[in-house]
Figure 1 (tube, helix red, strand yellow):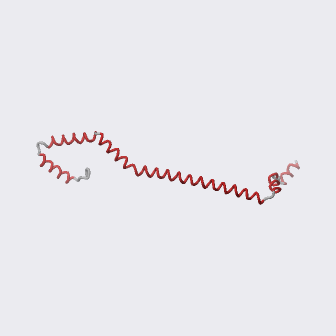
Figure 2 (cartoon, one colour; figure 1 turned 90 degrees about the horizontal axis):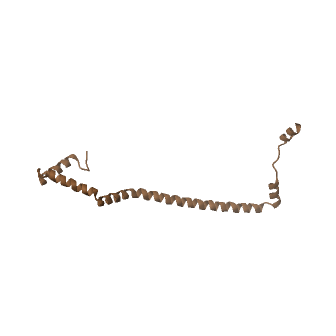
Amino acid sequence: MNFLGVGPLELIFILLIAIIVVGPRDLSKTARTLGRYINRIYKSEAWRTLTDASRTLRSLPNRLAREAAIEELDEVGQSLQQAKRDMEEEVSSLEKGMKAWTTPSETAAHEEKEPEQTPGKQSETGNE
């Protein structure tokens, strides 16, 4: 069982040193004074600034990784859009090239051609 990285034997050793240095009569007064001092430190503006800075530094790697991922996704999206534009240009140039291989009469005949009716349907409608 560790408390703030200090084991039970180390804690007993620290208390023995405190009793020897301060004395048994003044130990409670010194502990109270030390508690008040630590309380003032925790409530001070400098302590808040320090904890905010610490929190910011701990979250910094995650935030930087998120921002880098977003930038990378934007770059991928832009490259995909550029590839799409290039492909559209390629297709349109191929369509223009294919028109040169067909004669105008074939193109007009293909466009004017109506869908054929099946012979079975004509005979059925004619019998009725």
